[in-house]
Length: 587
Image 1: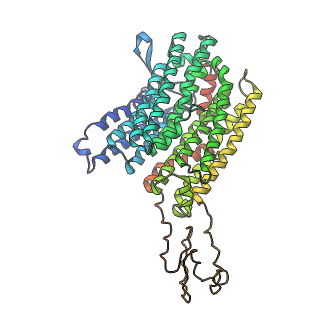
Image 2 (image 1 turned 30 degrees about the vertical axis):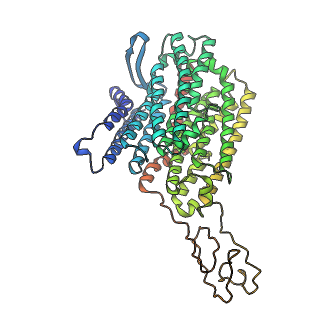
Image 3 (image 1 turned 180 degrees about the vertical axis):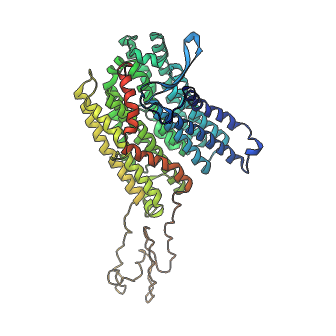
């Protein structure tokens, strides 16, 4: 069933445009603007160009999704297959199925929302020309990763995103941006070198680099020892990008230093490239090797779940001087642990849960980084102690809509039933309860129990963040004990309109008429003052959600609710394709 009947040639063109369009847009962004498009401000003109290109790519992705044959999601559609390097049998092979289509649309959506947000709130840094060009190159590389069906093209697309993200962090990031950018590039490049060796091993030993042919062969052309080596080599590169514990240490630094849109794209789409490689390449092409490493992958996954949650709890405690962006980054380590656990089960239930959790994480964590960026812009810091203690009523009292959105994203992230985060975690745990044949059921049930405990830790730190950041450290203003050394002074309990007690060490003048007590602003923390001293001003109101912020965040909120209430929309796409991959190309 297709919503709109679109010819195969048009579908091919749409997919090619989605992959190549952002790259052409990046080149155009660096060229001088035509006289009619310069406008009053050249910087705004190039930012508008970014919105236009990403918007056109998003429209093409939506049309592609509408024209997709939903009755046959396991079949590769909109395919293009052109010989590129005949000597190596490398082909420009593009196509989408029910696994790659949701990731393609998610990438196009998040990039457009980042471009729209940046148009109204440009990041502080060098020329917007370079910023827009880098974002478009990043989008092209990510979309290509999900659309190509050749191992060497997959590697090229996988690597294409590294340089743009490096410069986005290094040139437009915050404190410690250079160290974070270098750590990001070194970790991912070293992992990619090992991954390339594994991809070459698979292609040369099997006689083809075509991912569809490898999935159909289902590892029959590769010996078990070759599969084990391939899974180890390719898996290391994919695990660094995911990131899997203990190869995750680049992620918190990169997120903390990155600009808001950089964090959104890094969490929302770049992390998905690693888990997508596990599903698209390793599960179908090297099933025996995956079966060997599945228990270890699951063990690392659940350690990551617990480790990420404990790190978040440590950052969230009072006095830890934890950074809210860093906390959300560590939460990604835990959430991606659920994705890896689902993949390690090698069952349709677990892999479907992993793919669902991928999309849910992109929506929810993308929204969280948008919101944390907005909070940091308003307060000038993302330090949790500052946000909770020095702000009186915090977000609920000063920017209630922003506080409500942050609370919504937090409860969605902890897996509240009815929102997108719930289904992925539940399905991965179900998959771990009954793993694939040949895997140790007691071991995976232990992993399931540890993962379930991780969901409780996730709820704990997310609720602490909501309490501290949205409600503030103190629910009510603190009262001080009146000075009993002055018998002539009425007590606060017997004189409701008496002036506040004096600060210790400040002399009182006998016979002074007490001044009327100032009425505290609701939701603000009033400090006691001395008679005649200037009153401390109440905590000022913050700008609440602006129209451009609402435009950028509303789609993520709506899709989080839609995926939570109607999971069949996504599972109906992924399940047939997963069944075909795991059965060796048989529908």
